[in-house]
Amino acid sequence: MKLCTRLIAAAGVASLLPSGTWACAACAAGDPKNAGTYLGMTLMMSALPLLVVGGLAYWLWRRYS
Image (tube, helix red, strand yellow):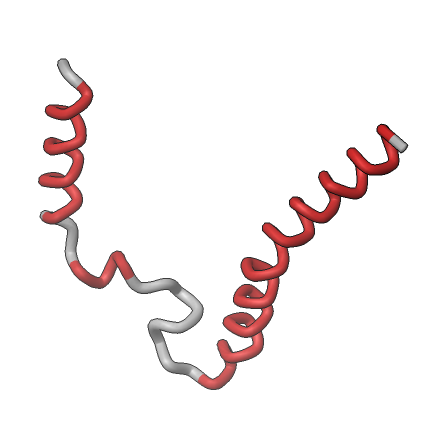
């Protein structure tokens, strides 16, 4: 099966999923007890790519200097 056909089939299956599956477990309920988890995961997901790129740059700088 060609890649284009597979992508179209995957998009069709994804469109049949209920809309509730697109919400995350931490913020969907609107419970104030989840606010800390939501904030923590937001900070982690924001910082992780920066830390990975920064760590790689630091490693390359230390390796080649």
